[in-house]
Length: 145
Length: 395
Image (cartoon, rainbow over all chains, first blue to last red; front, top):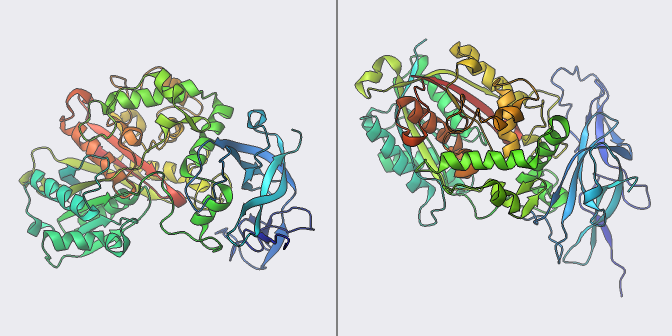
C-alpha cells in the first residue's frame, strides 16, 4: 500500500516537514513592514520602495489577540470533517507587528482559551484530498495548555 | 454647489423570494420610487445601480438590465460594486453628477437575490493562492460571522461587553422590526430566547447571526431647487462621505478578504473617516442627530458604531445601549428599521435600505416607530476590504 503523500494547502505559504513549522511571508527592505500572505509590492503608501521585498519566516510564537469557536461548519471550500468537530479560529499578534490567522487544533479545550495567551505555530492535516493526499496547513496551538 | 434632494423612494420587503430575479426586484423598486416622486422614467438623466455578484454577467450589468426594462432612453448607466457600501457609493456618484450641475435628476437602485445559507464565495478554487476569498474558507475556516465573533471578543476583553448586552441589542432591534412592514424578521424576541438559541461562533448565538436576504431599494434624486415639482417632503443629502482604510490596514490577520472587513475596536478608520467627511460637509455633528442607521451585521458592531460615529466616548457604548438611549423611545434611536439584524443582509441594496428608513423617518411617515420630530438623520456602513460610506440627511 502506498504511503500517503503530504502536500501543502498552498505552496510557499508555510514550511513543510522536516523543517520546524513556520509561516512564510515577506518584508519590505525599505520600510521594514511585514506582509502575509506575501505582497507583490510594498503596501505602505508612504514607502520610498528603494529596496525589494524579502521572503521571511515569521516567529514561531505570538500572543492570542482574538478568537472564536465555530460550532457550525463554514461553507465550502472549507472541508468539513465527518463528523464535524467544533474548532477554534485564532487571530495571533506576532512579534513582527502584524496579526496572523489560523485554525486551532480540535484537541484543544476551547474553554481554556484566553486572550493574551502564548500561541505557537504547528502543522496539521487540514483534510485528505480525493487522491488520498494529506493536505497540510499551519495552525496555532496554545503553548501552555 | 447645488444641494441634492431625495424626492422618491421605493423598497421591496427583505426576505427570500425564489420566484423572483434580481432584475424583477430592481424593476419593482424603481417603479415604486418613480411613482413616489411623481416622476416619469423619461425624466431621469442618469442611472446608478449596484451590481449583484450572485447573478452572473447580467448581475454585473444590473443597471443596464434595469434600463432595458424601464425603456432604453440613451442615458448613462453606472454599475458599481463596493461591498456593503455599494448603495452609498452609487448615491454619492449621483450626488456629484447633480450638485456639480451636470444633470438635474437621477435614479439610484440596488438589489440582489442572495444565495441560500451563509455567504460563501461566488465561485471557488482549491489551490489558487490569488483567490483569497476562497482560501479564507478553506484554510482559516472563516465564515463572515467568524470575524464578527472576534470583534465581539475584543469588546468583551477591552470594554466589558457581555453576552447579555448582545442579546439586548437583538431584542431592541426586534422591537423596531415588529413595527416595520418591510423587515424580514418581525417577531419580538426575549433575552432568554436569544441566549438559549444554539451557539454558532462564540459569543454569537443563532438568533444573532445576520441572515442573507433578497431585496431591493431605490431612490429618485434631483437638484434641491427643483424638488418641489416632485414632492412636498424633499429630504436633503446634507453631507456624504466615502472611504477605504488607510495603511496599516486594520483587522484580525485574515487574508485581506475576510477578517479585515471586520475591524477590531479602535480600528474602524474607514467607517470613521466616511462619517466625519459627511459631518464636515454638512456642518452637522453627532450631537445634532435625531436618529441613525448603522451597519449592524452583528450586535457588537452596532455597539462599536455608537463610539465610531461620536454618539458617546470610547468605552461607553455598552452604557448607551443598557440605558435604552438607542432604543425605541430613547434619546438617539439607532437602526429604527430593525437593522441588518432584522432585515438580513442584501449587500448591494443594504446601504439604500438605510437611506430609505431615514427618509421615511424624516418625512414623518414611520408610524408606530416614528422618532418624534425627527429633522436630522444619518446612515453609515462598512464592509469587505474596508468599503465604507456615510450620509447626513436633513428635512
